[in-house]
Image 1 (cartoon, rainbow, N blue to C red):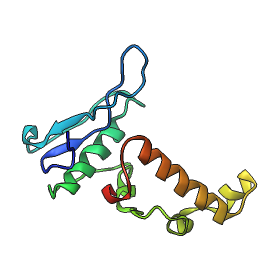
Image 2 (image 1 turned 135 degrees about the vertical axis):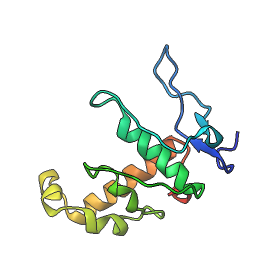
Image 3 (image 1 turned 30 degrees about the vertical axis):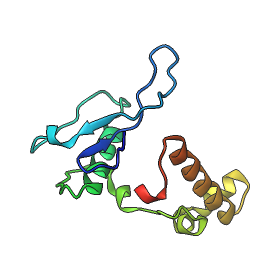
Image 4 (image 1 turned 90 degrees about the vertical axis):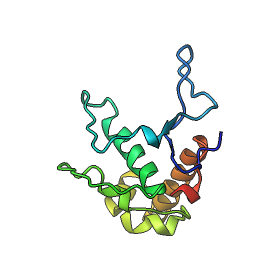
Amino acid sequence: MDFEKLGLFYLGRPLDPATLAPRAEPLLYDARDLVTHAMIVGMTGSGKTGLGIGLLEEAAIDGVPAVIIDPKGDLANLLLTFPELRPEDFLPWVKEEDAARKGISRDELAAAEAKKWREGLAAWGQDGERI
């Protein structure tokens, strides 16, 4: 199924209950089922922010406007987009102390971050175009 169709929100891939491995088919949400307001509740670490980010990203891709109240600032990183996933795009956000802690240069850490994001997106069937 083509999850790039307008009105379909890609939320990842469901896990196989027996193996906990991701299944091949995508988990899609029909945007027509949305209402005008939403609230996500759950215990700490249960995935509320991840679900919220996924829904907001998919809404933005489809041109659906959103008013977001984010008192903790968890969603501000949605404004950081690096569609080409180049190390030089990540470099301004890489801290010298983080690189030093790993015993590498900022350039090397930026390259590692870009690679991690590229591979992580690819593992879920995504690429820079969806960013």
